[in-house]
Image 1 (tube, rainbow, N blue to C red):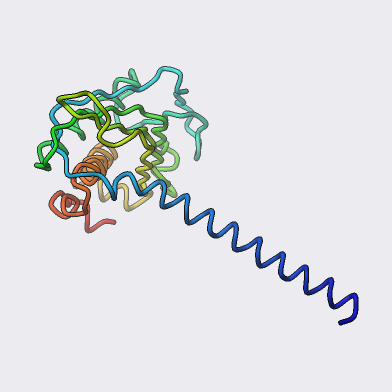
Image 2: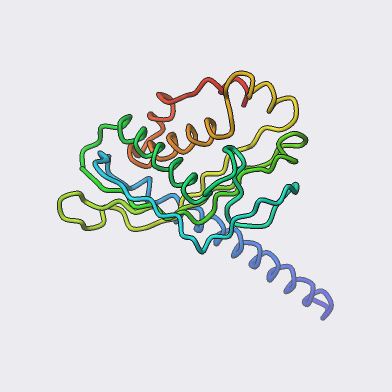
Length: 208
């Protein structure tokens, strides 16, 4: 084979090998994220603790995409840390009452990001409610981890423009949707299946 042909062939082999490596790494990363919930036993929530660190940066800027870790406009201006914590408290309480699992557990949540959409985005193009938190399940009797700490990303598409206005008219506010969504997510983490999600389907389903 001519030298040029050998070089081209070698480059093609390297390129294919490089693509395979990236693809495998990407798939494995997804499996690692999901394995904690897929392998978790069915659990019964008996207690919980939610932490919203004050190191998270709050933004009240009315931009399409405000900078910050906490962007929340679904309630009157106030203590955003307390408001976010209350949403998680409500969601955990509802999820715990919806799932009757086998192992009594305590859940610990540390919020890492609660970036809903601003007024500007909500009344025009909409956007993504970007929510992330670390979740740990501890045996209620021993205090030992039942499932090691892992990150949950609970993003939810935010309504915009006419869709947002129609939802508001039906009482389907940002707070309602996010609380319902987090309840669904946490119920699934406790149950280890999507059964809880079907049972908790909300009145905004037709708008999705």
